[in-house]
Length: 158
Image 1 (cartoon, rainbow, N blue to C red):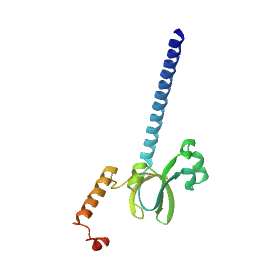
Image 2: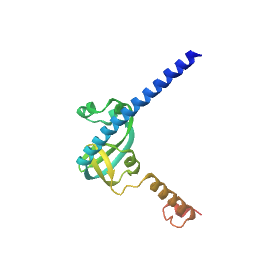
Image 3: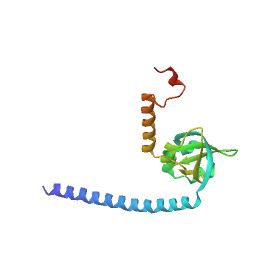
Image 4: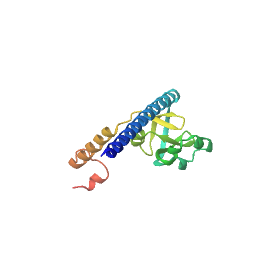
């Protein structure tokens, strides 16, 4: 019976050590993320872009220059990230995008975004996922009732 208590104590001590390690790693990562957010906030600019394409892909497939690709952390090279191909003036660029902004960006439209380097931080007039879902639902309801449906296909509905 004594060996059961010894095994239980070893497992409990290991669990406490693992929790402590995760706590300190989380604290360190939080400080690093706050410093990066401050840097992004200092360098962001408002730019008008024409969104050509958006997709979630590995950042190594985005076609960034070798100098930029070398600075990307190892885990970020493995994960799929939201990428946006956009036209700024005469130049076509690929941007990394925040997930919330990626969901709200319309395709084949000109939008005003906040850019920090090759990173899209925000979008002017951006709607949240919940607001976008409400808009879709209201459009579906109006199409179902036939009150506001004046599109091409509405002529053929009876």
